[in-house]
Image (cartoon, rainbow, N blue to C red; front, top):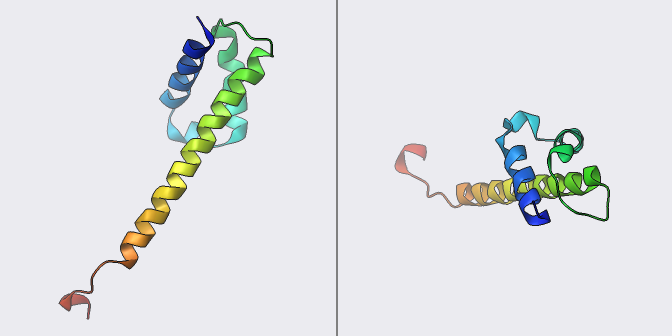
Length: 87
């Protein structure tokens, strides 16, 4: 498996976990140590650390997407028109 395939598989396995098991950096670190031995790819670095980096990046991207969504939702609520029932 090449490095791109290994990254895709690591992210697929990570995202297959229930959301409550992939919320923190500590969870990403622990999961990376579990799956790194299963992913056979060439790297000059430590397999565990490479996989951990992939999962940490995905976690940060997910957090950022959730933050942007919350901001858009809050902005949309501010723009809701006032109805006769709410006056």
